[in-house]
Image (cartoon, rainbow, N blue to C red; front, top):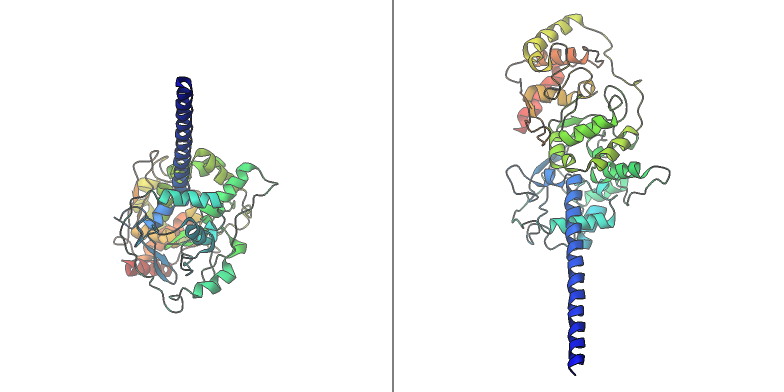
Length: 414
């Protein structure tokens, strides 16, 4: 009898050990899933839009400007009243994949579901698992400030019919695994073309001109195509990786909304994923320089005026030769943003200034000062024309009326 009892005890201990091991494996698996979800949320830059200035992370209520009005980002914390604490996995999948709330209402496409629809089911639920671990924050979100009929969520149904292409992203069997990973990150999680593409009058991306540059949050996001000058044609894969990881390279420094992208998103990505993004971007079509903008007529008197402003106000940082200071102040010479066909960001930068991204590699976060109180519209137009037509740069002149328009926009946004 004693031997039977010992055998039974041993069997019970073995069972308990097996159960404990299974629980440990399940715990480790869930921990890994949450960690993966955190990484994917960073890749999707979720915190940037869903965290108000001075607010709690992911608690929403941040204003997101659009050409039609202002939309306020939703609360992604697991608060049951004001966040997504009451959402099921299926609810979250539907929001990401179809752009719908649990009650069936349409989400506005300021939430980039036209890109998130490309994510895999497992990745979407991993993001949900991470969000469920956040501290719940009771934070009500303001209603969208939109004119009729856009104020009616039902109007999004018509927009979706025209511009929304639902479905997970298929891999290209004729491309490398790295290229396909880059496609997944750029076209899905990163939703890069949401800002870096021109839009039509209804706010839909012009699909035949994707990545040729577009407006985002009041800034012009430059072309990501491989066109030299305005695009990434002069950038190497390593240039792109360095820029996304640190916020700066020898050619440019991240400012404005792109600084937030670097801080909240790309600096946290693995080197392998950054390299995959760069490989994919370098494979986007370009015109190999044939489309490089060049001013039709050179106004020497205007360039002389612009040079005087440059030497007086700009050369201290960017140097008289336009080459900047390596690792500190970006060059004017060959700068992608300087060649942009839309000068909104250039005018805004000179008028209002901006802070660069802060990363472990570039912790100083240098800022470009604003000159709105020091320079007239004509002086700013002259100096921008000078830098766009000097140092080997070839881009169109800038008018004083363009600068005046951006000055007015900035005043109205305050």
